[in-house]
Length: 105
Image 1 (cartoon, rainbow, N blue to C red):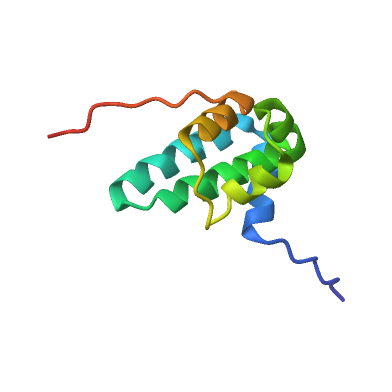
Image 2 (tube, rainbow, N blue to C red):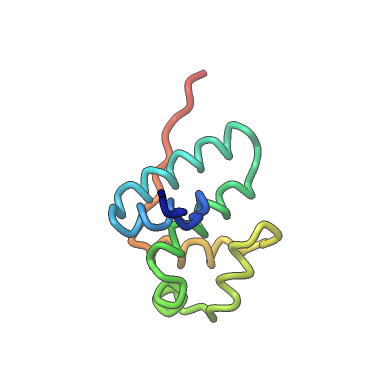
């Protein structure tokens, strides 16, 4: 007889993968930023940034970004409306440097 395997959500497994391989989290975030730009969906960036921040540890990210942990959770939620300065601080705390490129005409 086979034991039931515990249910793990896609988000939880994704966060585990990002913990094991931080570069994968960075590539994921870059892909989400590109897709969000193409689809005009800024919420996607916040969702992706939240997943990567959870992988690093929200408490640690909040401390390095000099933000209250509760504020970090709120700003990265679907209803979040963070200021650019806060997003930049989170990127710095995650040791991620965003890069822009020229779009094809």
